[in-house]
Amino acid sequence: IVWGDVGHLCRPYLNQFSVDSLYVIAFQKGEKGSEFGHLNETENDYSISNCGEYWLKINSESNTIINKLRSFYDRTNDLTPNDFKEIFQKALDFPELQQYYHTEFDSTRKQVIIKYFGEANHNNLIGVTKFDRQVIIRTEEEIKQDGIKHYFGLGDWVCGTNSVRMQLYYPIEGITLSLMFKKINNEWTITSNSLWEE
Image (cartoon, rainbow, N blue to C red; front, side, top):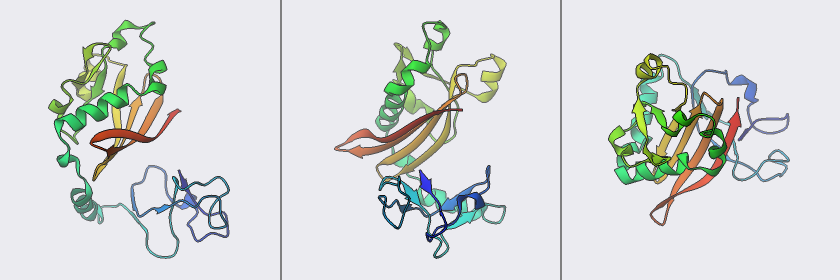
């Protein structure tokens, strides 16, 4: 959750960030319900300072900068095949997600399909299973051609040092699952999550 200004905080109003635009933002940790933050704000939330230059809207001129930032900060290449397997397995087995599979009404959903994404080597997902079946990857073209409705897409993937934030969306149910992973004692642990219906 990112909290904006209410009139007396040194923060930008969030309505100045355009929907469907991309930004690079330097976030600050949230304030726990103090005079410097919102009443319901926690230290697990975020804010943006208005006292300086803390965000950059991506446009054609800034794309080069963004690509350099991504290559510098993105640690996806540091992940091992076991890391990928553990992260995706925990995401697909996330307890709150289970009610949306509806395999009791549609047995074809027992074959979990993930839409191809370009951020990682898909061979790293070999061994990720659901309903005792290997999860498979299909391109967007294959999904359209075969009329597949029950697939997962990767909406967001941000990999830092020993941390991954990912979003899986499931269009047939209109849901998105956002998970934050941290590697603690050599095991990937979900440290925060949210699931919402559109």
